[in-house]
Image 1 (cartoon, rainbow, N blue to C red):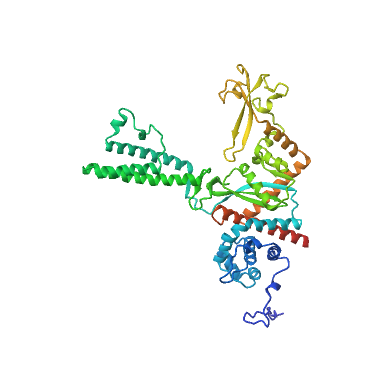
Image 2 (cartoon, rainbow, N blue to C red):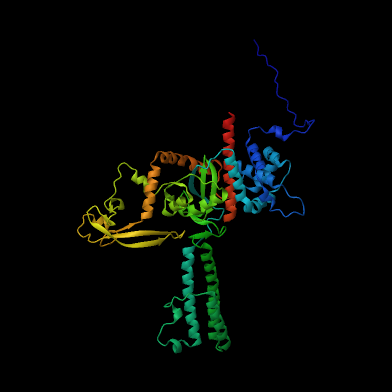
Length: 525
């Protein structure tokens, strides 16, 4: 039987067929799309803070509510550059629906993000926080905190290191002192004033060389140039003057670099607010340290810092949380780097329950853990006599109190020093005193910190503590994982501390809206 070829049929395809009525874009967007979540959120919040930034007059401006929707939805869909967002506004049906036919160009979107949003981003984030609380996405009960470094939008090959600037400035100052001595030789007054003594400028005196001091020497040289009749001496004076002026420019440059670096180890030339930070791949690159706090995998606070030490940034981070909301989280959970005396005191004053870890916690919880004889934990305290007894039954008596200031935060900690009378012949001498080159063992005890550690240990080993410890890795690490891996944000998109904060607040809000969308889909199914 011969094969019978059936007739081929295709669906109607008429690209030039006009519509009788214009198509409504709203009908083309599904009811559970992410763009509707973004649109609904921005429509509900108060944007009066944006309206106050407009002066009025001139041509009409694009509505800030529309521009905010476009920015947030762009971040939600991993579009971060203003040119790509402007392109999506012309081509993507979701952006067209948000803009209702408006077509802002990339400059308008960029100015809105970098100028207007920069000044009011905290108010908008506060609205996001109120939205999450009002709709029961978060309860402000458990606060999980951690930090992560993000590479700055700066040239990695244009780092300025403070240590190098100080070193080169000292070399330049010494060159200036040598030139000062040559000026005195030209002036033929050194033997009369100093006789057999060294000149102050030759390096025996570490007088600070300033731009003003160099100007004084240049004035002296100008006078010498006018007085000298010998051509050779005039040329020498002019050469010294040229060298001094060159060194003066260098000193001004190094002073500016040291001032710009401040307490930091260095900064980036293309983004002076960025600091040199060690990334996950061990490269030292210009970056920012982002501290974030979350609950239910929703970011409820984020702060940008120029210091890589999370512990010293914790106070500023919590102060920002106070500005966002009056609701104080009941419990705070963070990793071991946060478990310092200063941070424990901050939580105690704020009335938050302390579930911070401290550095030696993991070691203490190991089954095989046994403190070494030289460890502070091996010494027994006698409260009646205020003394410590070492494993070899030697008594350590109180000697003095020692106050130390934290280098970055300025927090002052007090330690009590106890010392043994005679450690000679002790079997643990090499472990206790040998590496430290001490005759007798000295014990530094911070009683306040030890009290906080006992409290943290009790909290973390309680039933509630174990529950929070299990959640911590899932909660805050998931937030950073979603931002870095799923959203593809491993680098800041703007330059400058304030603009980077705006950028990351938008990223955090986009992360939250994506989470809200997923929760809504789960509830709908």
